[in-house]
Amino acid sequence: MYEPITIKDIAKALGLSTSTVSRALRGSYEISPETKKLVIEYAEQYNYRPNPIALSLKERRSRSIGVVVCEIANNFFSQAINGIESIAYNRGYHVIISQSHESYDREVVNVEHLASRSVDGLLVSLSAETDHIEHFKNLHEKGFPIVFFDRITEEIETFKVVVDNYKGAYDATQHLIDSGYSRIAHVTSSPHLSITRERLEGYKAALADNGIALNESYIRYCNHGGMIYDELEDAVKSLVGLKDRPDAIFSAGDRLTISCLNALKSIGLAIPDDMALVGFSNSPLVELLSPSLTAVKQPAFEMGQVATELLIKLIESKRPVTEFEKVVLQTDIFKRDSSAGKTAEKKPKAKKVVS
Image (cartoon, rainbow, N blue to C red; front, side, top):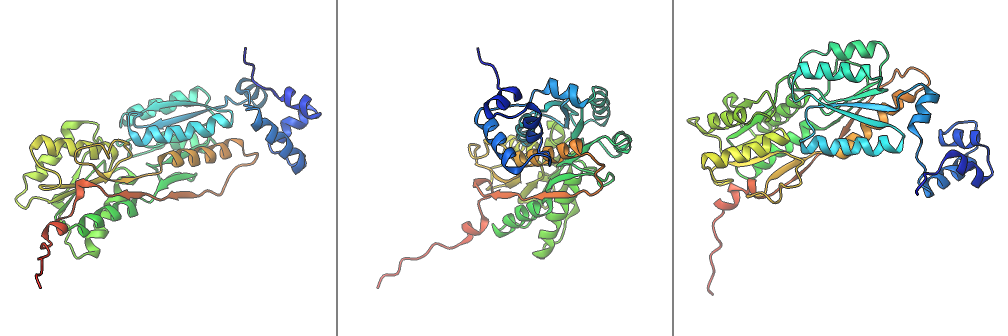
């Protein structure tokens, strides 16, 4: 029967006391760098993992982290959660996940429940309905560790991890312009969200830099972020029904993008011939869709890892942390068939010259 290696086993193997091994694994300044290196290398070699029950009793902490996201069945958040768990597990923490389903009321209940279960801290991505954050302020003012990621608030001074939403949106819009599209619509989420505002600004900036006037009628908000398909379908149909119909859509979210593709197909429009499409998406299936989807991809796994490291830093700090940072990660755009260029179609075919 498999038995995991313990601190006592490491101490016996290396001829050290259990207290020395324990302090070395915690990175204590009392232990020499040479001894720390010896202990850590041995622990890694034999796959040592901290015992969360023993640690929680000793440190009077639950060794658990609460995570609040809109939904797990979202490619971006599922990848972020994988990143969260990869760090938490190796640091001896359990992860408890709750879903707001884009509901403010549900988010409040989830946060209260997690706090009452004595989690050591929270990783939070705000719901689409959240327009005030007293439930987080109350916890933060009591010294409760909170780190926001992706959908953040500027009203609380703490660590935050985001992507460069402005640049991701700018690059997506610029790609459509470079491909010959000029009547570019923008389908986005709730105006309450930080990601909505930042991506909208990137979209507007790309239009302005290319001398394209902003058409406010081309902007559609879906307050549930694509979770309610009928809401998204109505937005797409209203764009298609405009007298000066858009020739392309830039969508600002994972579920929004896939739903836009389905809505355009259900209306009977060919992509990209009738309407080009580019959007934020972390779905691994975008290459397999018909047509394959041009997508702005976010480093979701890395975001989850970075946010968790920062939260554990807050949890384990011996003194109050007063200096915080906003970590900004970069996006990538992957160009595929859904935005195939008008420019390519307009180029005249080369004539064969007979000499």
